[in-house]
Amino acid sequence: MAGNKSVVYHGTRDLRVETVPYPKLEHNNRKLEHAVILKVVSTNICGSDQHIYRGRFIVPKGHVLGHEITGEVVEKGSDVELMDIGDLVSVPFNVACGRCRNCKEARSDVCENNLVNPDADLGAFGFDLKGWSGGQAEYVLVPYADYMLLKFGDKAQAMEKIKDLTLISDILPTGFHGCVSAGVKPGSHVYIAGAGPVGRCAAAGARLLGAACVIVGDQNPERLKLLSDAGFETIDLRNSAPLRDQIDQILGKPEVDCGVDAVGFEAHGLGDEANTETPNGALNSLFDVVRAGGAIGIPGIYVGSDPDPVNKDAGSGRLHLDFGKMWTKSIRIMTGMAPVTNYNRHLTEAILWDQMPYLSKVMNIEVITLDQAPDGYAKFDKGSPAKFVIDPHGMLKNK
Image 1 (tube, helix red, strand yellow):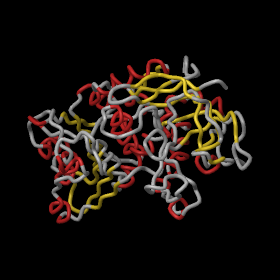
Image 2 (cartoon, one colour; image 1 turned 90 degrees about the vertical axis):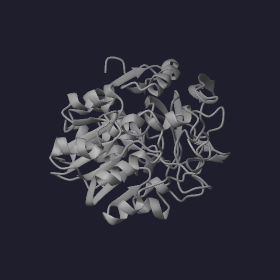
Image 3 (cartoon, rainbow, N blue to C red; image 1 turned 90 degrees about the horizontal axis):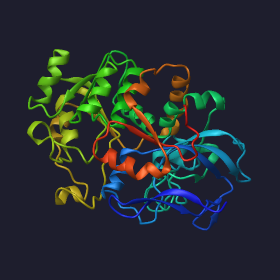
Image 4 (cartoon, one colour; image 1 turned 180 degrees about the vertical axis):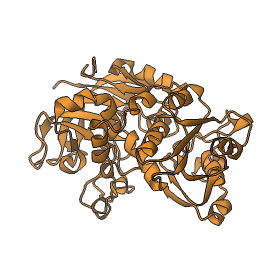
């Protein structure tokens, strides 16, 4: 192959579609016989990609972005036993070896293998995590294929539902993980901070888990409308009324059983401060409205270093939290990336057996070409209610 058309980072809000070298079965000059090369069928723009786009995550210039990947195996190493050429697969965004202690204990979100990342116990495609090239491209290298990849057994059936199944690589398991971490179960009352794609997937996941009432708060009315049209309760955080009062109007009490932070460190305030970035905003609001003995899942991203912080403490990942309130209420919290391999198979079955018919409605997927990706990023940055899915080879037409 002569090249590989890809979305390449050149600086804050400067993405370019360029041709980079076609991938090889190697990484950092090390041959990878456990890897495959995929022809990318779909690859999505994620809120985490927006952190990079806005200059809030550091990645090197020239890096290919994207970590939400579905593809077709076109080449495989000699150690790959469970995948065949032509297989349609979903790629967890976590790069993980399947061999270290954490991976063996179902914690692929914190893989300890130094060959994945010698600097930290985590790996992912498309970030500055030791050079794993992203999937917003025509082709991509995926290591540890037998462990990492989820194969769709019926390729034709999967392609019929590809607009839902493209979410399996990250945001649907991420939102679902937030709900599981928060202890959502049949009859739960749930508050989700954030109506972006992860927040909407969390709402979908809470419904799948049997929650009696799912409330989502955000400042974006178009995103909230997608949820209300699908039967979820919503709160416009631009409203000056206290969040507890608005929850009370819905439930008849001001607290919920479970909370999910689907926003992270670029959170904003409430009411008159809805347009003001407030890094501790989502967490403190959750500490306020989750009942004593409840739990909070925090799949929203928080960082140890922010190149463009709102204050000095935020720049080094230090937040002013109402920890005393949270401690006094004995609220359990769970942070970190989702271990996608724990959830992707079950969520795939839920989609294929039509157990999430509301998913397409709340996600509002818009399919775009690779050449349209920079414009998709710009629209997402301005608050578009769409979930942008890139179709590098035109395989999603009429789907």
